[in-house]
Image (cartoon, rainbow, N blue to C red; front, top):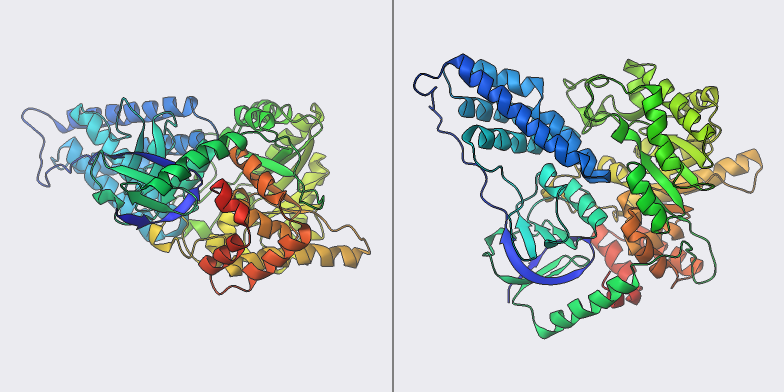
Length: 567
């Protein structure tokens, strides 16, 4: 038996046969010139046709996807038609180079530029290289790289997955997902959780396993083991029973002593909202409105936006739906809104800040949200991403008031917002912690980078302290107003989907948790086994830990239900 230890990002215990991702498209020869009678014009035409074909294929796959998968595919489709990439390749073709070699070199240049920018834009480098390979495959007339075909289910192992591949994983064929790279909050991890696939990332060495090898995968502990033993076989059988028991959520979440913890869903469109409502979600804690804007050259009209928002609102009549205004920029560039030449986009014009350079887009979006809310029974709340100062919070609250929206809020994902929560919360009605960005900004660690997985972990005591400070700021703001009722502070980041971390968040005073709908039952089951006082004690243990691993271990040791359930 050989063990590989990675980071568990999506629970589940599976035994299956390994299938490695196929080898990538080979690099065209460095000196490959235009062949025979092929002219530069012919090569440019072939390149443009291949680009359009890849764009159309990815866009078509996006149309059959939903939620995070849809967002990833749409963003990658845009990259296939990126003018910078194609223009760079055309210039190289005009020197007498073949189309395949030209797009290869142009893709390398764009990817290097993005990688050097760091942060979110470094992640886009992977997208460019994926698109480059797909265009070369199209030019060669061969199959594009992707998930291996198989007549039987398998455990997929890869260095890392391109966004387009991750977004189209078929849970009927892929039993579990293991990568040697990536981090706990990467797109790979997020989509695995949304699909309910057991998943382990940052498991160094797994790519050496041969196809057909039998492995045990524990998506909670991060263990991957070859030649499973009897105990692991039993663990898989126990998980099958647990998964069946955890497949239902009655829409009610309370701690053992009756403390109410509403569990909401993160959604990216009407179809996902309907699924979340059917799963028992008590509302929507994060509506990602980017689904209305991606893969467009121009801003969608107010009427188009109203129709899209209505589909989500109507899935939750009488329930809370928290809408995040457009979070464009960084890893979600939009041609009509963001500047692709920013030297450090993760710290640049993104989220709420786009109102500085493109005034009017945010106001029109708020108008559309208000119009959709007016003809719906949903209780619509609205929050802005990337709020960093009290002045920004006050300005956003004013925009909401002008649009007729009465429940404005802010996302706390910039450390300054947590540190000044008392004044940030004064002009608004609520806050929601975006733990994905809060973690990477706190730890200065890109959440897509496998080598930084240990840093980019929401269990980091520094991140938990910022959560605690945000809740304390809300309490202090209420005292300043002379009100016993503090403004609610929720969590809509991926941290809420971890049952053990959910206990800590409740202990820190978080009022609501929002997650992928597949995690609702597991979180509710674990919270039902502890009292609020016990949750507060566990939160103190985590806060005092010297590092993320110790914080997680301390809490899990006091929650035996997790091992019993395989979570």
